[in-house]
Image (cartoon, rainbow, N blue to C red):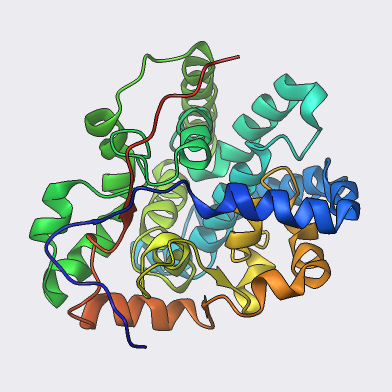
Length: 322
């Protein structure tokens, strides 16, 4: 690709994130993009169908041998759960019920969380706001790996292990980088999740619980869909900190691949992000982007110039809370 990053430290920059200025320019030139903002009326029905599909799957796998539990967890259940985690990502931007119904969005995210097996939605919301507000912010954006991760996971075998352990790092990193007080919504999220897990266990035994949780962990580790974790912000080309992916897996992931467009306009639901690219094509067509999440994972593991250190970092001033 040329002009690659080098190992040894993060890429420190002393400029604002590019999305703020590009958003201003695009809205000034194409004010009609504002009409794309607002809730997605179909999201709640799609997500509900996925949740009930997984509950049906829990019943269907209850008597399967363990090898088939893990097979279906990776091949099917985990894909649905990863997709639901990305639905929660969209819901965290209030696109299920709109900005005026924030509580409905929060509780619907708890509902979407149920097949994931582990309480996730409330904590994700709490930290994802910072990811957008302080992209790459030192000690603020917990999406950026720690110095230890950058230093240690620097060989192909270690990077492969790091990909496998990604769910663990995403869970524990916030507690080290930017610990925050537990919110009431996180408590509710945990209580609801535990209650439903116990009900499933009472009705159908342990295997459905393992099916759900194993699928979540496996498909957020080494899996084609998990390529989006690396594709979104790892600097494959020096000077570019956010990348889009326009391939077919967007159909399964609520268009999370349209990531430059999403960071430019986080209040636009995933289903309308392709329209942003179409309207403001000259702003996106010439930017580097990915064609394959599988290729992203391959390059991340085997290219010596790419690793956990391949991220932009900046020092950000804390915004005033409203």
